[in-house]
Each structure stands twice: as structure tokens, then as C-alpha cells.
Length: 88
Image (cartoon, rainbow, N blue to C red; front, side, top):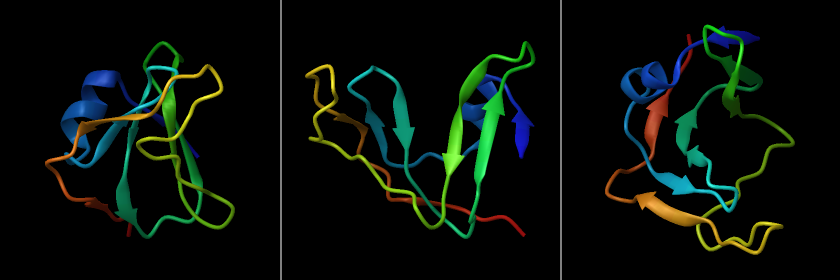
């Protein structure tokens, strides 16, 4: 499934949740979800914004993990609990 969004929409439309800065300086947002698939997010120009990944075979890389470039994953927003991201 491919979903068109823009980065502002990601920030505004998805609920605040635990967020980690990756070793590559991207962001991972963590959610509780009932999804069992991958959703690819693109902006209106077709640029890749990221993915929502859930289900069997997925794993989480969290704060303190070491990226292949030598940087550690760091907490950005730890004041939030895991938000729900449910799909009917």
C-alpha cells in the first residue's frame, strides 16, 4: 500500500509518540498498532518519506542501538507513551 503524505502531514496527522533519532539522522516513531503490513509514505512529489512497518518479521531498533556508521540511536521525544495507530 502506498500513501501520499507530506512531512508536515506526518507531523500533524499522526499522534505524538515515543520518537528516536536514528544513527543516520532520520526519525523512528513508535506506535501500538493492529497493522500487519508495510505502508510506504511518499510526498506529493513522489519523494520517499518513510514507512510504517508492522507484523511478523519486523523488528525495532531503539535508543542506544549502534548504527553501521558508528552513531547511536538517541531519544528525541521520551515524554510520550506509545500512541495507538489503529486501522479499521
